[in-house]
Image 1: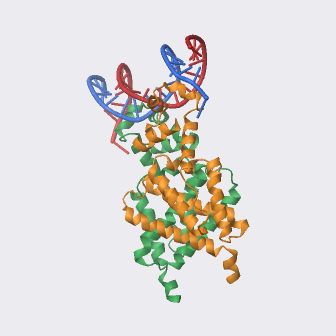
Image 2 (image 1 turned 90 degrees about the vertical axis):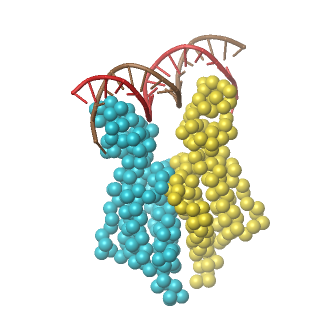
Image 3 (image 1 turned 60 degrees about the vertical axis):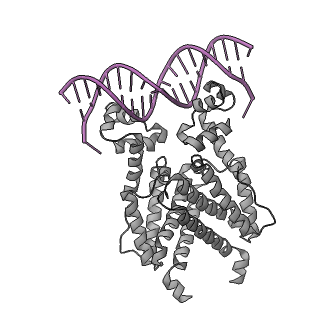
Length: 177
Length: 177
DNA sequence: ACCTGAACACCGTTCAAGT
DNA sequence: ACCTGAACACCGTTCAAGT
């Protein structure tokens, strides 16, 4: 069911995801869906959660900055594959199982980078907000008039800034100062 | 009409903004609205544009960093006053008259800060994306479980990072290095 | 940037009923 | 994590018609 809904959203946009269209795609009546999901809101929640499932955890052998870069590129890829559903990520609490999994990966990388443990959660929110804000802007339409090439440059610049922010907040760096 | 639509969105959410509800509020039939607006999509465009109208340009006597801070706080205030409509800002091209006005204000501040002219547009995109991403996350629900106090701290931290980014990109700073 | 009535093809959801 | 038919109160939008 979530697979059908996501396919519809990817192909025809979020507005085309209706109880009737999903049901039709499954060769069933709309009412049958209520056996499997509480309602349309829950269906959309499921789609958002599925998006995060597609984000792989990078190999643990990599250095922390390479892992964070890989995750950021992964998120951008998810956004590009599912532009209709992706913006919903900003509209519900980042407290679902998949959201926790992803956040855990970022926490680990930040700890490894030497960020003050007290500052890890805030730094994670800062990084995630910036990356999500960029990805949503890109697929949501805000940057519609800009070329892919230009946006690739913007993304690279954003990653540099975030790396600098992490390094500046690390204990190693503070000891050096 | 836009005033009615915005009032409905603020009070009852975006889903409650329908041609029928807006018409009812204006004591008119839904069909009458089509004289004033092309359709529902255009109505929503109008609401988004109206939001930006609420963002005042800070006094030009202020220093560039104080002006940017004031604009960022202003945007966050707009988001908090209109949480249902605000997220739509990321979903259409930032090329409307009001969007140009706001961007112009940021360009001026960045030039004053000494940012390399070639880098002003990209820096503006970086700043706007981060601020919008934060504001949308906050009012959209992603940070729903966090206290206002915590989010105030996050916002302050974000502004600091952006200021540092601007200073690092200024010619004055590069000359000093 | 005039308003309305009637109609169309859609929505999400509930409920009783059937396997 | 069973499916359906009939029904309800909604949607956005078009069209012909009225001022």
